[in-house]
Image 1 (spheres, rainbow, N blue to C red):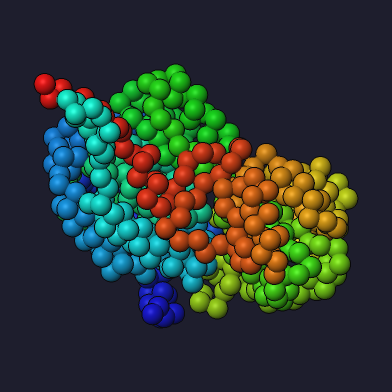
Image 2 (image 1 turned 180 degrees about the vertical axis):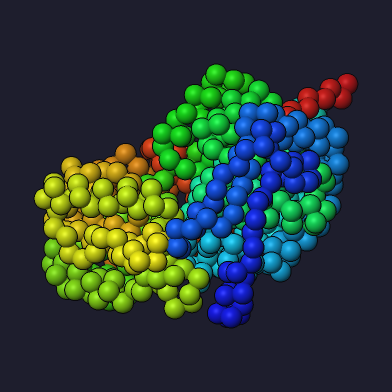
Length: 496
């Protein structure tokens, strides 16, 4: 149980300058350069991180390769890896509030959500893959009697992990944990505006018993350190969550370098579809509001396009507005806040640009649409709802990644399917209906990697997360994720 006094104490903790983490120890960037860390809570600097460059990425990759070749982790018995990862998960849980507060100071997520979604989720993910890895078997092929065909599963080698700023621990763990469990070494490139928790995570990994060089972190700018990782000739795979343009560049870097594997999760413009026979319209409205406005809309699976059947449109919109106005935006380190800060002043400006464009294109602003709490110096935005949105508007086509909801109405199931699929993205979606047949038809008809039914969000580690179309093809979570970080090797043995 967390309490406000402990949070307030941790809020005052001096962070200072954080260094890179290479070969099991903190080190300075070779250039000596650093970046200022600005908290979106109040717009003030509270830490510095090393501004890693190409030389630092080279050092980290060399460290990871050396550790992989040494074999103390890559060739360790799965039971040993399980033991270390279990200890790792325990340490993350032990330091959960420290990690949560540090992350909130970095990116502005409300503490109630951050505590569960970041360190506690990361610990659960690490434990899940630690427990799973000694249950992953190779195969024996069905061959003739005079031949033995064996299919071995081996780690890839060095995996580059590039994570976004909205949930760096949770999303980082989705990639880090299965990669480590499979026996790989990793080099993590955190986001410039949310690096602190991943640096701390690396320290806890070594404390848990992970050999030096297996877990490396290079902070810095994506255009420098991220590009260097993508182009590196000795990186075997890149696991990335972030924007489409950066994902495209990583594919280009793979082609220009060593044809490394690239796994991409690139966000979405997810439809949330409410039929007239939804089991509980009030509950659907509450969940839908949370599905777009929690973490200031900075969630890749956010239900940012709301489709409501015409016969219940007015009633549902009344409930949605009630649910939205009850949400309190405020200091993310205050347990009384439902919504925290937008991650940065730059992101806030981008969000307000989408609002202006929606008004210009003829959408009707129902509520919000403005910066609030400006006197704090932080980046806060009111939950924003537009209706009369059409499928050709920017608000219906592009990912805002902010607390901005576009609402459309539909008459028939066929129209709902057409509107839902009228996007280049295909990450998540939801359907609210009491009709089991409708639910099954919609699950099959919607082009998305996740279809929620009578809920939005909440899918746990046991099922995969990933998208269709321009939402990418990098499945995180579930046992399937381990497949990304392993290679298949055939042994064909003559028994004559």
